[in-house]
Image 1 (tube, rainbow, N blue to C red):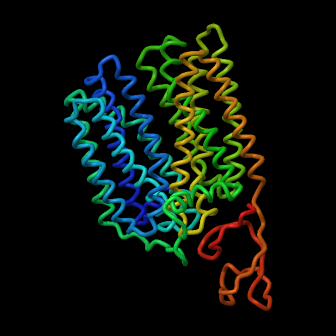
Image 2 (cartoon, rainbow, N blue to C red; image 1 turned 180 degrees about the vertical axis):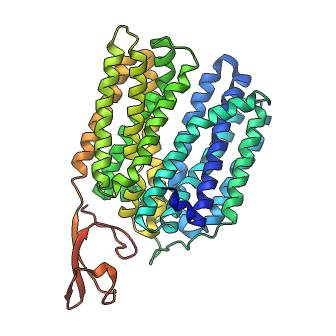
Image 3 (cartoon, helix red, strand yellow; image 1 turned 135 degrees about the horizontal axis):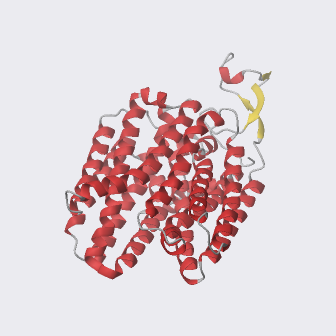
Length: 448
């Protein structure tokens, strides 16, 4: 899997991603401490509002960026938003009002909503070979999981020798380093549409979203996003409740539970490149989604149990299974979007995925917290498990398999590798294969 790092451009971009993620992790820890300094006992409310603002920024800003990204130099865009993030991180230590935290969090997350889909859309151009791209997706998944595991530990180590305000300096340096790496990287030229998009600003901003609602397997991806969000919200929001209140474990056991989730995700991310060489994305992703419903049933059994020392290791196993199942759905997502959107529409499609998936999180985060607090953990398990099961079954119904499309090529020369097995007709070459959207098939079918 590490072979993809031999590609200099990808190596620079991946390093920039890892550094920026580490900086973001430090900022997350520091924001919690800053909120406590400003709001005291109301720090939880401040952080909850900040998380909601983060999701709103993701949902609203990413489609707007997708609308204009094809008219902007991608490297300049990525460097600019990295510098904006660095500037925001530099200002955070000096705030002393809650509203200032909210404004800066919105700016920071808006910049991230511009950077991430652009970054994701560049990678398929850097690594056009599907095997390499699959391994890059697994590397990206590992980077996210490792950040969630090691950033808190790094923050804890740094806090033993410095105050939390200096963590924001680390965040700023991370974004500056990311910008520097992107600056010294030569990116492939972006594919531009043969004809400019028509319509007003709204039509352009919703182009990627309309693609999701038009192509059936992307509609299935929407349902899969909801299933993952239901499971992820349960882990993120209620881990501390399960560990400390329900099971009576010490505070230090909370990172262990979250680490089990990350470990399950990483194991799958490491294994998937070889699996996806032999098994279709559809099989892996749908089985991962259906596994989420099974894991919710296991969590329900733990929650219903009245006692027993077995519940703690069982919870760790359930959290690891949640991580594994979520990784089965999330890791191949880039491949699915790459095959479903023409090259010139990739940034809009990745922006739509970024926005719509975080819209699901915006729904499930408060549900997990409110149900757990007001109706109890068992009610939260049943309700969110029901969402995961319904969404998974809906995805199965929407994604009925690879569509085989019969079509003609009129502009490829005799002997082109893509024409292997094709039949020559009066106007060109005719053949059948599963739907793919690329430079040879610029218009995605609306029947797959």
